[in-house]
Amino acid sequence: MDKIKKFTKIFITGVFILSLFLTPIMTIDASFEGNEDYYSELCSTSSGYKDNKSKCDDFSDYLKKQREETDQLIKDLKNNASSISGNLKKDEAILKDVEKKITEISAEIKRNEREIAVLEDQIAKLVVEIEKSEAEIEVKKETAKNYMVNIQSSTRVNVFVDFLLAGEDFAEMSRRVEGMNRINEKNQDNLRELNVAKEKLEAAKKDIDFQTKYLEDIVKGQTIAVNEQKELQKLAEQRITLLRQQYAEMIASQEAAEQQKKLIVEKIGSIGPVESSSGSLERPLRSGYRVSAGVWNYSSGGKHLGVDLAAARGTPIYAPANGIVLYTRKDCPTEGSLSSNCGGGYGNSVLMIISSEGKTYGALYGHMQNGGVLVSANSKITKGQQIGRVGNSGRSTGAHVHAELFYLGTQSVQSAYDEWHAGSKNIQFGLGGSTWGNEYANRCDVNGWKANCRMNPQKYWGLY
Image 1 (tube, rainbow, N blue to C red):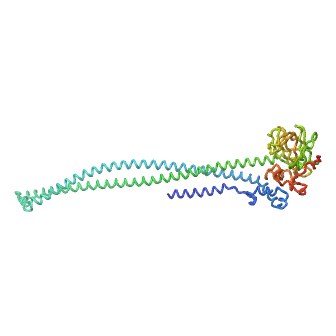
Image 2: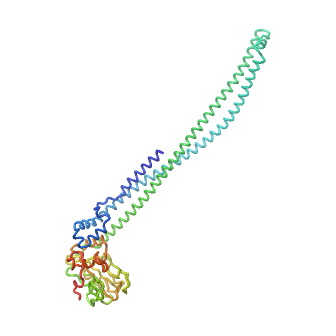
């Protein structure tokens, strides 16, 4: 039992130590951990960023550290996985040793049980011999007793004297005395022999009784040992199962971390350095279009946060500046309707981060035709590159392109890209849609062009 307690203590201690190895050490600001959504929302508005500039800058640094932490996590996971693998091999060896001991002790118990059976058979035979000898002894004892009684009762001293004196001479008398002595000595010898035989049989019986008791105690102790070994086996199997499970989880976590790293690398690698375009942002369409709906409000009522340029289906749509594609939607039917909510109502669309004259912008173009989105998320674009074709997808009643612009400040495209991925990944850059109720305060003309803010594309491009 002491072995079980000792093994259990070692087992629990091992699991505790293992749990320490399994806990990745992250060098992060505790105030950001678990509160990413809060700080993303806080720092995504101009007022929030202005009032919390220092904290928001720290939050940006925190997000940039995530890739480094992912690399470290993968390294730690690999080290931990290697450590757990070593423990598994050691514990599996212990388990094999325990199983071997159980087999050996069980075999010894069987041998002892066979020996006990032999001893018990010998005891049974000895008991029979003892009983037989005891019967013979009792007969001889009775004969001797009767002899002595008869001698004393029927041959009194005088008679005995007469028997001795009846001899013709002294020599005869001597022979008679010697004969009587021999008879008595023979009787005594018989009694002594029987007693010796009885003592030997009793000693043999006691010896076999002792051996039987000794072997029974051994078997009892071995049975306890087997039970202890089986308990150790159970604990070892439980620990190995736990380690195998943790090892599998560790490998899964490592694979997940590797995948996360791959995604991060793909995002960063897909951006690369983006050179700022020269001049102003290019219009979505170059010719053959008209303004079918102005910015902020429809003529019939309701908010409208972009400008609509009506054109024939398939009319080329161009990138406004050098940049990166954040998001695309390509599977909406070319023909939409007022009730269609495909792509959030924007239908087939492209969301971009672009740079012009050292400033960074966001652009959202919607309602392209099915098969008319010619770029993919995370792809680089250059100013004037055709990125799509006019369609009537989503919430739309005629072929046109819907265009929205966002001012993102003087940060780099890379920084804006990381910020968007780390934040809400909102198609409106967190500035509110037509139903949010906060888009007015987020207009650049209202907040003094403090990033991030919503631009007036109709005014910017001079579309009237």
